Length: 234
Image 1 (cartoon, rainbow, N blue to C red):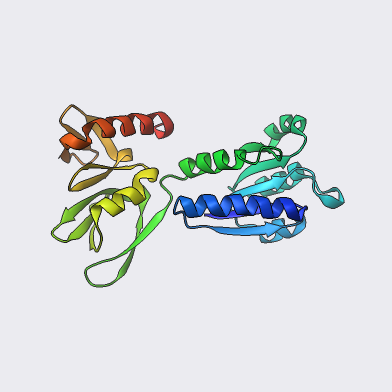
Image 2 (image 1 turned 90 degrees about the vertical axis):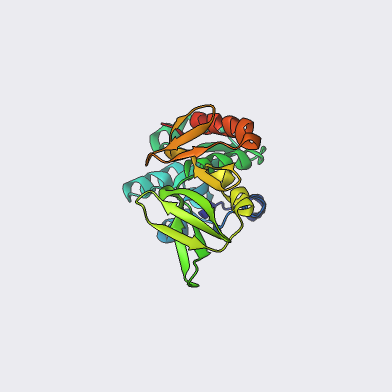
């Protein structure tokens, strides 16, 4: 995840950077963060997924105008405006702002990051070594399930491809939980995006595969699946 902070005051740049870095490290999220003191340098080098952009920059630069330049350039990054004057937020409809953050309430940055991670839920890649020692990049968007296979983990993709890699299923479950995956029984982690049907005993995935819900996992799974449907299912 690439994050930019465009803020002309150093004290605020450092404060925002500190919050972002702590969040990403706590959540085990791979990230890059780039700091800019002016919009000119940001526009010239921007390749961000998420930008925290001050509305009122030095030398007359305007955050809304910079956001319009991003749109004109076809950039898809989400913009969180930073301001000490919340009345300016009403102007943000022009640029489809992702969030408005009052500098007096920097805890709002955490909420913005949480929300952004949810919007990017299926765009993350993980890396693991297969049984030949080759490092495999596995895109979560196309990962159907993970299954124990002897002492290895089997990664089954939606297109039918499969990879056998090193790993411990409980550790992988914890790692992927925040990205829409759930360990439905001792031997399976499933991508909730691809669940077609749920009943009291089992789930049915989009490829027709049925997986029994473990007794000790049933209650938590139903809670997690309901929450996932509320947040992410269109």
